[in-house]
Image (cartoon, rainbow, N blue to C red; front, side):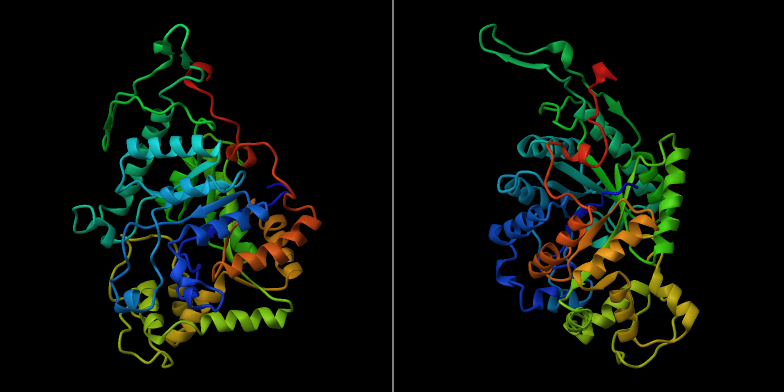
Length: 440
């Protein structure tokens, strides 16, 4: 943890982090697949001197429940295609996207990352996920996911193979000398010849070594397997928000795990997710938060809560309390904590609307620019966070308000950068360039 707070601008749905943020009056749902929409978000984040833009992704369309089609604004473009385009209309902000290690091959991913890193001048990053839903498995020839722990074992080997492929070329191995006719030094090229449990990859990569050496690696997740993988391999981790005590517990735990893996305690930058709603007054912010919540149809509330807690609530009245009783197992999707279940077990019956509202408000920060800046400082100074993955309940208006009202306050206090320095994304996160094989 340092005085400077890292900022990542998070985009999962083009309409915003709230599932029906696309209905907000400032949203432009007809433009959600246009470069104009995403360029505005990226350039606004860069205007706010965010360290990175973060595009979350999934390899499925959420049609498990009818409301996923009827009400949930879940269309999104392929993220690395979009980031390549955004690399040409931005100049400094980092460019990160989700990669499933379950439904990708390391060679494709290494080549994609190296290409984006070259195109952007050292701004590429990836977020390792193992995927969650059987809908994804069915898009890749399966009926259901492989076991949760096995997905993480595959993910660990995946990282090793990607990094090995990124090391295919030594720095300076590409000579490209027209006078001599020598394009590359053969002694600067390395075949990987990896043969593991999940992958068999010869190499070498047909793209020169990236500017960062290894593009920055993010991870998320709160399961035991996920935390161990992150402590061993990640450069940065984002996690759920919560109270200052919750953040401190997570930070202390992950740093202790990193030390057990032979890394320094601060080797991983830890960034809780937050969802700010910014108002001119605190009352304005609370009213805006309530208005966003009210955009969710009852059918989506029932099906969202059903999925959260593993209990079928279809056909119920959203305002009638129910007794919690798990009816289907979601442990192979995720083994991260389930706060809504914990709350039901502790407090007893609740209405679906109340459970949904509680979950929505749990990571919400509603307030004025100075009030939200106060909370960021508290979670950093007392909670030990290194920065934040900032989710916006609706886009593009949410990021506009944050950059106009919260960022200047953080800058005035000296907590976030006022301009970009001439560093790669790795270096901005406090990590040196990974040297090539010849210089390790």
